[in-house]
Image (tube, rainbow, N blue to C red; front, top):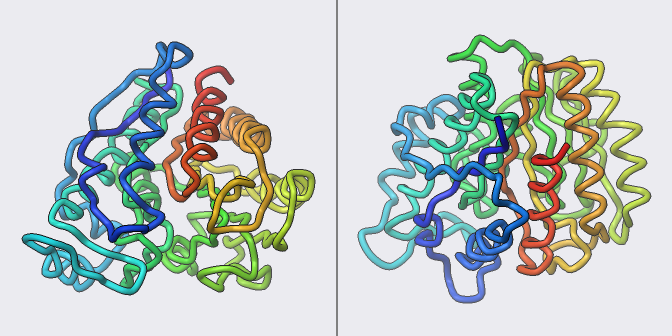
Length: 308
């Protein structure tokens, strides 16, 4: 077995306004970073479009119908000031969802040790009924529900280290004790959620970080809040919402992590996957808007997935 990389050339066809941080070059630099000889052992798989019904694992019909109706035939339309659709956005959403589902299937079916989904648009800000923050549907949530409904897994842990709180993932699972959502994120910062007292039914664990936080404080928060919660939850699968905008170079946050911090956090979650869920771990790209920081962080993260 090996680490699987799920991606596709289509993701650069989700077009955004000039100067938008969530731009096609993000996927280009990730592909380049994962293309050198260090990653020869990666099993590279082109994503396939999921059926639209897969969106219903995490969203109601009304939300899916709204997004389908908004699809432009040409140009771009804005769902909100930050979130724009172009003609290929809908297909990119379906490809991301299909890749996430395939990654879950491969890891549970033991065709892969673990997997990374390099796709866009990201998903963790997408609430049950609201597209926002560059996100339309919540891929991580869809993956978790697929693991439960198709494969019968009972407890899924979603760990999110994006610099922005994953309000969408929290919203979808807020009242669901079968899914643990644990997040480190800068606060205050968009979207304004993620306080420690937002606990759901005991399944939400937020570890907000002050602007200017460096790696030592991030690791302390991860060690004191996130890892014990995952350990106690004893998940059947771990999903990482791997945003790399907490990197010190990133223009959208003020957290000062470097690649060694992402390497460390990846390793800690791999240890818990080994302990509790037969190594079932799948990661997917969320944020990360400085191209150099994103490329280096993705390479480090995937390198750790490959090499343990």
